[in-house]
Amino acid sequence: MKCFYAKSTEAHDPQFRLSLGRIARNAEQAERARLLLAGLDRLGWDATEPEPVPREVLEKVHTQELLNFLETGWAEWQALPEAGPEVVPNVHALNRVRSYPKHIIGRAGWHMGDTSAPLAQHSWQATLGAASAAHDAARAVAQGYSVAYALCRPPGHHSSADVIAGHCMMNCAAIAVETLKPTHDRIAVLDIDVHHGNGTQDIFYDRDDVLFASVHATPETYYPFFVGHAHETGSGAGDGYNLNIPLAQSTGDDGWTDAIATALDRVQSFKPDALVVSLGLDAHENDPLKGLQVTFDGFRRAGQMIAAAGLPTVLVQEGGYLSPDLTTSLVAYMAGHAGLDIDI
Image (tube, rainbow, N blue to C red; front, side):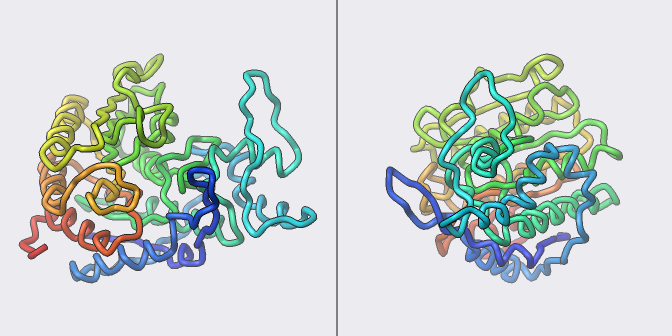
């Protein structure tokens, strides 16, 4: 399998997170990459350093304002008196009537949906690296590879065109879609991260050339809380091209893979030219974020099912947090997808 990973992401190691009213260590740590790379090593696969993603590809997904904020926001923040080491919002743009602010504090509140994706000194280069990995994986598929994997961190599926959140910065799955578009007219996105891919849904919600399907823990009790329900089916031209399958947090392998089968049935009826998979591994029963109860066998089965769809596929890494089982979760999924006989 063709794999891509940008070493520039290793300098991105966010610290701040507000959890249950307490300041806590951020879950999206640089150690995640080491655990995922260890999985590729167990599979005997090398990761290629990606070429820089063209700015015009980023602009197909994100607003100029967000891209400028990600690129320059940290330096502007540091010019403030007594500024902290990371950009963390203390206001949010919640009013129905609102205007884009000039001040960095206001811009932080405009572009940051929560406090779990702080912007630090190396965040821009890291998210560029993640976007580049997704771009090159999609280019590989466009050039004839049946499947390619982008080890992206920070992840991206909670980020919309103009707002970052949930440990995510640029939306790598959406960047993969736009990279494929010149050669593939109809593209399906299947998100199997434990969290609903609210940013990806928002980006494609009114389009009929991109199907979005997400299998995730119910937002009634789990992040992102406000979106990800079954009644969200798209709007305008996109009505009927958005599928959410929320699951109880007690769901294990059978319920999870049954939901993926349902999502894949919708994918097949859409007749896409290519598939982008938001490959979150945080549905595992031992993931620290405790969303679902999926085992290694469940990940293997998911890999087999998605491969059996027979579509040119870009795998984009999303969640999966600090646990020794993260490495094995990746190995289990990839073994299923690639048809490898590996003892998990």
